[in-house]
Amino acid sequence: MSEEKRVQVAIDGPASAGKSTIAKILAKQLSYVYVDTGAMYRAITLAAQQAGIAYDDEQAVAALLPQLQIDFAPGEPVQHVFLNQEEVTEAIRSTEVTNNVSTIAANPAVRADLVARQRAMAAAHSVIMDGRDIGTTVLPAAPVKIFLVASVAERAERRYRENVAKGMTVELATLKKEIEARDYKDSHRAVSPLVKADDAITVDTTGQSIEQVVARIQTIITEKTKDQA
Ligand code: DC
Image (cartoon, rainbow, N blue to C red; front, side):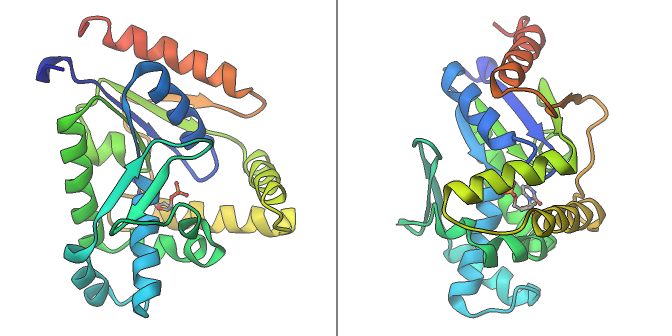
């Protein structure tokens, strides 16, 4: 594919708004590469855990970065994630990683390193990239920017259903509190906080089916990229 025809779709929004589910379906439909940037922050968190490094030891975590290779491979129902060639798809979703990834994501050295990796991926392929700072920082010139939101209550219920399917029992109220805590941390950190890009289109998924949200974003992508075809 020629450089001019490469398309970048940025999908940002808070935890459990449906970003990865939606982004993965769209990427398959459009034959773009799906880049789950949250998984990259999670992989670094797992690496710190495995190395026995305190999550808030910014320098020690930064020193790990050059040794860490993160790769993705398509998969169902979730994309496969590899850390130094070892599959970590499930390990990066542990409660330990989930509850500490915000600390790692607030580390400026980690952000600089991962943003560079994400831009390199977008330079090589048409991408659908989901995260928190894609439209504002990673790909500010992306022709399509979506800000995906849903109520806290609905996001907690979605996470609850996912957990039950995995055989985990965490109370709904606890999940709601965790989501609120993560929203707060992600929105208030000094470097690249979660904010909507001025030119992003907000899509509220509360009460919407996956199909409805995919169709809505598909329409936005077609509209925004029609001059690029
Ligand atoms: O989307 P997720 O829950 O897998 O993201 C994990 C964490 O990483 C979340 O706390 C926010 C952070 N993150 C970020 O700061 N910037 C991104 N581009 C993606 C995720």
